[in-house]
Every structure is written in structure tokens, then in C-alpha cells.
Image 1 (cartoon, rainbow, N blue to C red):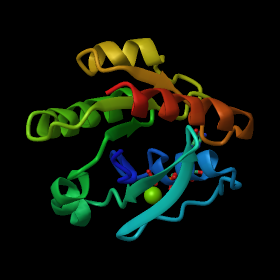
Image 2: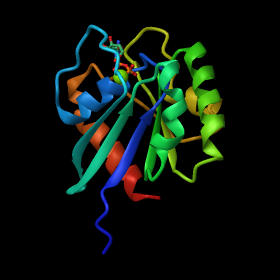
Image 3: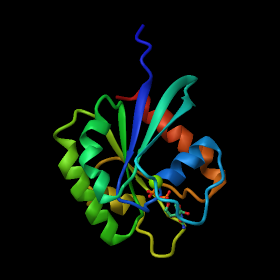
Image 4: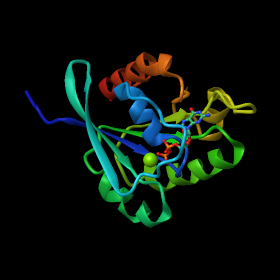
Amino acid sequence: MLTTKKKICLIGEQSVGKSSLLSLLQGREVKKERVPTVGLEVEDSLLNGQKCSVWDLGGQNRFKFMWQDFLRGAGLAVIVCDSTEKNVEQTKEIYDRFERSLGTKIIAIANKQDLPGALSAKEIQKKLGGIKTYGMSAIRPELQQRMREILEYEINTN
Ligand SMILES: Nc1nc2c(ncn2[C@@H]2O[C@H](COP(=O)(O)OP(=O)(O)O)[C@@H](O)[C@H]2O)c(=O)[nH]1
Ligand SMILES: [Mg+2]
């Protein structure tokens, strides 16, 4: 049996909540103040009883040149948006840029569902051209299990 660790990549514009979703998954407190991710953070997480590595890359423009390399070998790419109209458009551009060049399975997370005026996951899925989209709110600790279930389900159905 192949024992390579499965790799999950979080991609998306800065401030959409990628690092916060990783914290939620890991059961850490999500910080209110913004701490931009500098470069790359990789953490192991136990999903389906199997060690997976979750990769979180800084979303600043100066890191975008690394995305291609970053996504190599990923079993799952999770594109995160903040559920605003403007950001969903930017997210669609990122998606269009990467979906062809990589064979990686991609899902979307519509984060910040707690904010007033957030587009629903269903609307966002439509805007993103039909990729499977899950609503989330990284600041709600009670959603930790839900976050885990999404990744466990998606990493297994390639
Ligand atoms: N209201 C709300 N704020 C969030 C949510 N997720 C993240 N944030 C906030 O958004 C900011 C950016 O989050 P961060 O995880 O650093 O984004 P990243 O740049 O994509 O890694 C921080 O101030 C977080 O507290 C959420 O679901 N709802
Ligand atoms: Mg970050």
C-alpha cells in the first residue's frame, strides 16, 4: 500500500481566512486580529485516521508565483473565498488559472458566512462554474467537526 502522506492545499486571496480555517481544523483559537501568513505554513492533521499535511500559503501577490509549485502533488486543493461578490470574482480568476494546469481535485470553501450580506454557498458555487462549494465560518469553533468532515470526505473521493 502507498503510504505517502496526502497533501491538502489551501489557496485564495489574502484575508479570506485560509489560516483561520486551518486553525479551526486543528482546534486552535481563531485570532481576531489579522496575522498575515508569511511564506508557507505546513501542518499535519489526522484525517480518517491518516496523517495528512495541510499547506497554507501566504496570499499576498508576492507569493503567487509559488502557487504552481505549491500545488504539485496535492490530493486536494481547497480554494477559499470570503463570500463577498468582489472576492468571489477574484477567486474565479484564480480558479480559472489553476484548474487546467493541474490535475488536482478542487473544492471551494465560502468562508465568513457569519458576516451580513454573505453570498450563500449555493450562489457562490454557481458563480464559480459549479465546483463543489461549502459554506464555512472559521470564527465559529463549533464548526470544527464540520470542517474536518468536509476534508475527510473530499480527500477520499478523488
Ligand atoms: N467574521 C469572520 N472573520 C473571519 C473568518 N475567518 C477569518 N476571519 C478573519 O479574517 C481575517 C483574515 O484571516 P486569515 O485567516 O489571516 O486569512 P488568510 O490571509 O486567508 O490566511 C482575520 O482577522 C480573521 O479573524 C470568518 O469566518 N468570519
Ligand atoms: Mg494566512
